[in-house]
Length: 408
Ligand SMILES: Cc1ncc(COP(=O)(O)O)c(C=O)c1O
Image (tube, rainbow, N blue to C red):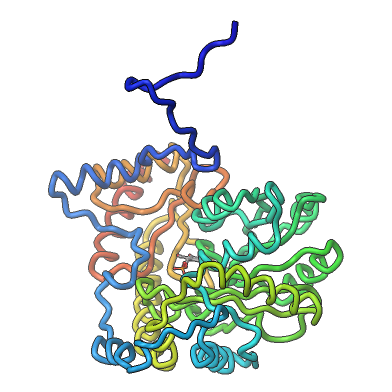
């Protein structure tokens, strides 16, 4: 006899939740250590910061608010692709990057994360695959899961800078692969995709009928004088989607404004845009006042970008000065973005090391595992952290490893 289905105490049947949401929601060891330290009143130097609004930058608050105070915010005349004026402002941003673009290539979204979900919905049937670099940004796993998409990682390797392992990438392509995603510059490795890599990626996509998804949220934050081009420039042999948004470009993650720009063979672009429009029309999630403010905010992005770039570069210099005094920890080459990656002795699991640094040395950094580094020996520090906090935090890390150097 088969077992009767389980019943709740009150006799009703329990709800079955979708398997795609059966996440392990227990906190990581690092998150637990941080919560405990905060509860105990410890002053932790938090070098995991990624939120610019709480990192001590000076925002031009009056101008930001004024941009929202226009009579048009009372109109409700939605365009699923986004208000034309806002799309024109995004075109002007790309004009500044030598990438001429027409408003009809653009769809506005409430975040880059939402843009990914539109593209996963556009390109993938349930259980289709998208190739994604490893290491990379952890939110991708969730974005893919909630769209029933499988992420198939392809490795990056480090040899005087980060590179795509094309042999491994080719092997990951299956009949279910629908797209290759890259982050340019990548989070957290901070490397730009080179022109030679771009050519290979585009050829692979064209050969296998795959779309190329390019996330450029950190494009405006080079850490050296080498500038890399947006994928919005040049020719596009494969269907290509370039994603970005105000979270990083204007340091305004709370405003929730981003976009998808489509390029490539005319017919594929036209089909993609028509279908994305239906997805966008289904939700109409973009907020009208924010769209009206996008033009002025994008036009004045230099004010916050200059502060963020100066902070990240100064913190990187501080780090290099400290590291030059010891030999156990090295920093990997970084071209852009808000993070520095440290190669540390793999004495223990990264997660345990990060928790120990919080508990005993009052500094929080990301363990490499957070970004899917395949083995131990990696820590990731945010360069966005306020100067004094960064100095104190990196000195703590320096002292910890310097004390260990007697053992080596
Ligand atoms: C690489 C990358 N893409 C996308 C996002 C999310 O951007 P948004 O706030 O527009 O969703 C982040 C956030 O940190 C990111 O690091």
